[in-house]
Image 1 (spheres, helix red, strand yellow):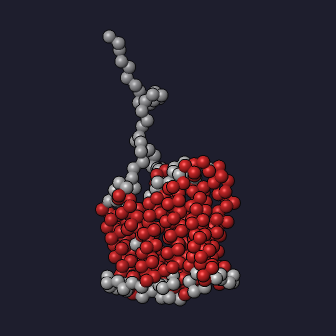
Image 2 (cartoon, rainbow, N blue to C red):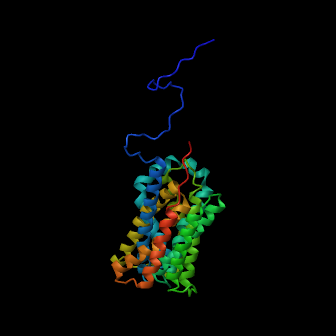
Length: 330
């Protein structure tokens, strides 16, 4: 009979023993997991994109009377291409074979996120206010959540309730206290833009994992600009060009560099970290950001109804964002 030897409590653990998972008892704070850090960064990036895009609605509305919509969108993406080229041209060239392999998916993302979305936004700016544009675009997270659910993602009761509260706040803002909406043509263009942007965000989840962020960004900007070129040529022939003045070049630089290059990079990275549905919850803050920018830049005051609606939106966002993140695989 072979005797057994009892292991002393302080004896070293054999190399092949399973890793201990007990929490330390020293009283020191446990470092945040990589998943939690990634979630926090994703929310911050989604918030950055949302704030920058809120300013773009003011700039877009400002350009509506001086630059034809298609020409404004075309030059927006030319500027965006020039802004990202110093950083993205080399990764784009290095991954050209991978880009060719996934060209269909990239072309579809370019169509929805670059060509259609921004053209619809600039078209809406002709017949609706910047505030309405921002408020209606806040409906796109609902569509993002629908796409996510169709893709098999479980949203959870807390997130759905938060989304419902935020949607009620958006509808009350648009309807000026009533759920019976009186929509201008520009409002309908904005709903189409919201659908296009939600489709783009859903496609981001299927972006080839091995394709880098910068290469993806440069490719979609390039393809979207090429798709716009025929419409730009037609607009230039029928409507003529526009004068290059501080009042036209300034807003174009903002939407080209900030709203396109910076915000799209931040949004795409946020989608990769936290998913379209969770990033879409942060996007509900856009009406609030637009209202604050309108107050700061245009002197428009927020009335009691606006304050109540913003409280609903903020409360819904907070509730939905508090939904528990999925567990990291072990």
